[in-house]
Image (cartoon, rainbow, N blue to C red):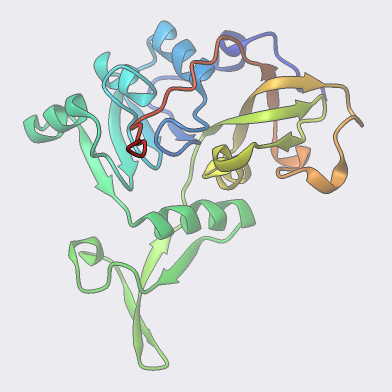
Length: 231
């Protein structure tokens, strides 16, 4: 199976209107910049996006929000995007807020082939409305379903021709979990190397999970909020 694609445009070409996408990253760290740009250029509409956050106004998923390409966001934290807030309050955008640990575990469950999980997070809050609650050993747990995503789009530091991936530092974040979970996983990497060049002991995502891979270009690697110490 040839997993190598020429560029982002080729890799996302069959993502159709109405698809459900997982997008790796945390804040602006480790986000699939090239794939997002290609989707903006392609103009794919009515997307359901599963992501820890919604980018910022002019970067990341925020670019798709600007073009009204996102129908629903399933996220944990969305506080840095004014356009997201505007669309939410105006009723233009559906939003499902998920506790961050639950978001990660629902990704993991999907990757492991599990249909659902039980978690104490959200019991007794609005998150639990309409959901099954069971008691185990005297404690209530909330039933949460595993995600069902058509595509997972992730960003890695290095990858090889077989799709094995290595992430760098905090850019690892949600990427490994989402790479496991998509029906089709698309990985963009800063460096694409021949099979066998990566140290097997350092591989974070085995190539069995990755269906398409390409070498990305022109990464901005923005910092969402820069905090420095006083002199």
